[in-house]
Image 1: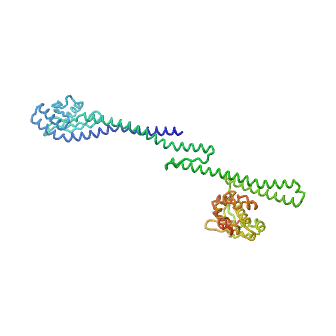
Image 2 (image 1 turned 180 degrees about the vertical axis):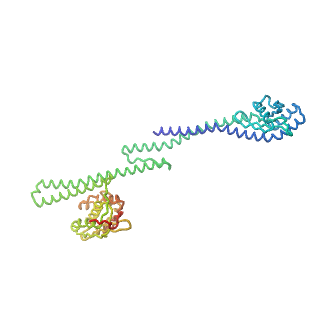
Image 3 (image 1 turned 120 degrees about the vertical axis):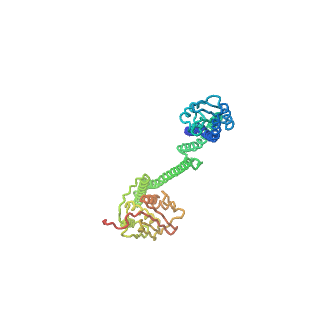
Length: 471
């Protein structure tokens, strides 16, 4: 792939340079010739008037052809231009060229048509510029003077320009080939590195990275690929940890259920007290297993984007009262005082069942981690266009270094205590996912040994009693 790309880039660069140099090679000699011709024309015009006066006076004085030829030769010696002198009827009176010039016929036609008009024939590929000057006196036409620059120097300039252009074009093509090969290699090399990196990742090497050697688009692509590889590595590692944690969490209740069942089948079922104790343990582990499965299903729906929220306005105070009433027996069994402070007119537009799940998870955690004699308080209030829900406890608190991790899946501050209290390690992770799905956020503040406060911030949608009452 890299070789193919390098070849394509090289051919493209060479085509661009070749076309550019060909265009230059065709047009540059013409432009130089035009510029040189313009310079010659200006020089001819500078010599035209003095020469016209000299030849006009000589012809008025009755100079013969030999005298006129000598004057023409002097003009050529002084200016370097060939001179052709014609009579009004087109006869050649004198010329410094050894043979008729290709433009003599044109000169004759011009003389006969407009002998008194200054005629200039512009430069062309057929020859150098020439200047025709009518010789007149008192309205009488004496003849026509034609000045012709020598063709040799002009042809030499044209040949030199063409030769130089050809050499420069060949050199430019060779240089372009070398530069294009180097540039193509510079572009293709990191792409080949990315290809090799992708191959290594496909084989399971998630530590493969590509060096970022530039700050252009190719470098940006390499950096993006590295970021993607790092994200993929983190996702795979998180998946592995998740599967390991799930396996461990499932193993504990399954082992407890098996142990209780084995004890019961070994004869403990004959003792009513033992039977009741082990059956109660079986029910507790089954409940724990069911809770873990439910939490895993919730997370699976969240990860798959299938957490469908049925958002409708509802009175938040009613929901808080419902949850605190439901958890009052749990709080009483732990010797914890459970209280609520809410605005009775506070309404919230959200999925009521999911908000209830958030409250249950937060309050259960607070109750379980608060010692007997402590308190747990849930409060809800309006702040601008948001609803703030807080759950504060006077429990054991969370170490400062563990605060950033409490919302991670299967993370426990005290693993032994969590399992003993029946926690799955997924409750706070589910809280965060549900809150963020509503467009809100959740945070925690805690002081070790004094308690914790979990705060949930949700968009209110409706923050007061709607016109239609809900019963």
